[in-house]
Length: 161
Image 1: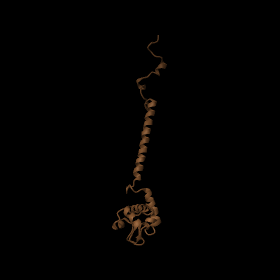
Image 2: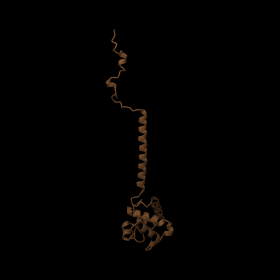
Image 3: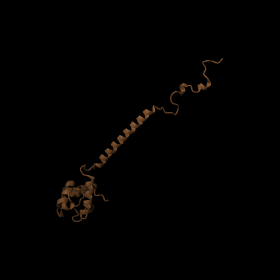
Image 4: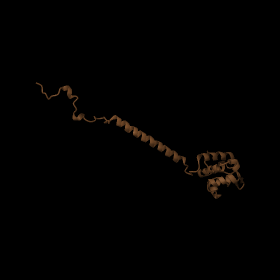
């Protein structure tokens, strides 16, 4: 007679042995699927928020010029256009075709007591020496825009474009 405690051979293959409990070699244990989705969604949302904050911070920092937060890029662009249209005839590349030692180079401006964009704007509007003022020609805010642009170029050494 057969042993009543013995299992049939077909059931031995499905019987869990200690080696079969837990992950097999190369397998990664899986948690409940609903928890994995929640964790992944949370990580993605946090990542998206951090990315937006990082982009916003970068835009804020890069939009603020190191040479003066009050000088706006639009003002500089306008100043450059006004300078090209009304000033470059005598002050090409920051020079001076009338009086060679009265250039718009930084060292010459400082020597003449011009210490910033506001001083350049005042001279552009009212004139100085042989140069007449251009307040009406430059229009409202024009002298300030030209002053900001000229001072920026002087700080950069009047780079050629």
